Image (cartoon, rainbow, N blue to C red; front, side, top):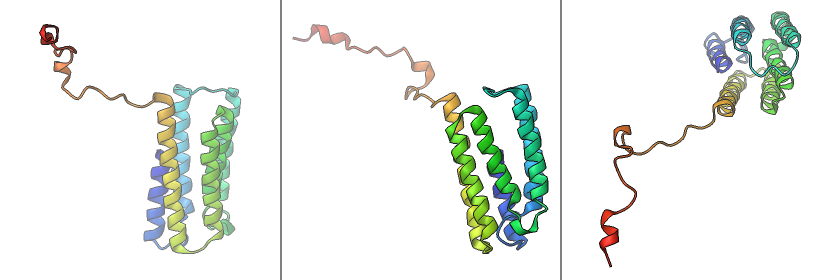
Length: 176
């Protein structure tokens, strides 16, 4: 969800400053590095399934930080370099965790980043930012549902009344 918010704010900043196609590399790179550092610290304390060896995750974090930093400097990517690197990192993390949802989500983010690098129209860049935001938000929701499941429907009444009603009619036995 953090990355969805990052893409939403980045797209808004890019559009307000008339930056081009909606891909502001500086803000997106800085935000990605901060979010990745926070996520890595949280994951280190609360590891997920961690199917792959721990070193693989460290290499992924280092490669993502290096890729985001370097791709933000490449002018021919039209500011969408960190976008594509983040998508590739999500794909690799999905491969490590054996989650097709993450691999599909990362591929979509990479494709949107590639289109943002190739298309130089303002409105389409903003639309790609919104599309990426929606993909990341839906992916975060699906991951949450995979881990915690759906909430069960509770009784329509207040919890104080649960158990005070009987499921049968007392007068039913007296009727012919």
